[in-house]
Length: 166
Ligand code: COA
Image 1 (tube, rainbow, N blue to C red):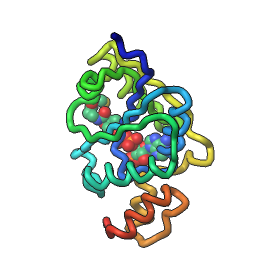
Image 2 (cartoon, rainbow, N blue to C red):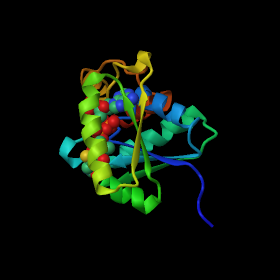
Image 3 (cartoon, helix red, strand yellow):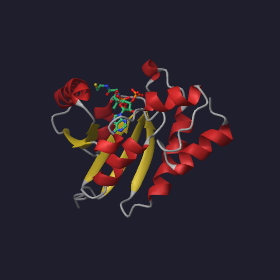
């Protein structure tokens, strides 16, 4: 029998996952039956946190959200379209914070659909109160021993404190 659940993939580097990402996930949970958070190895971006740490922090952040919608968290190091095929999930969700995100998102969306025509990319506008948040902002504050507790979930904040990840 065909799988009729509305599955969505939310891909990113999540270095680390922020309240901005969580806002997108929370809103996606109202639109889809099943969310797969795909955490890219992103070697080219030289992430501050290992893939293992990013997966662990994302799991804690999702636990804090207490969603009714099932959420899977997986790492990947291949093309997003190949990951999507392996999951039989062809809708990708991305957040749009500002005009500056648009060009990059457009290029990524076109690239993915040129590689796999079944892929549809859905963009959700970030909540205005989260529009300034980026993982770079969080990493910069961390590197100067600043407080990030208003930018990430309590579980992520605690994980970073306990694991002295930086
Ligand atoms: N709230 C807060 N921050 C947000 C956000 C939101 N709603 N949406 C995006 N961001 C920020 C992130 O914090 C991140 O900040 P940073 O660059 O300062 O660290 C930045 O926007 C983009 O990061 P992210 O959303 O994690 O995505 P990405 O651009 O790192 O990830 C992949 C891109 C992984 C999805 C893409 O590279 C990919 O698919 N890679 C696999 C290889 C592939 O298939 N390539 C071909 C497709 S082009």
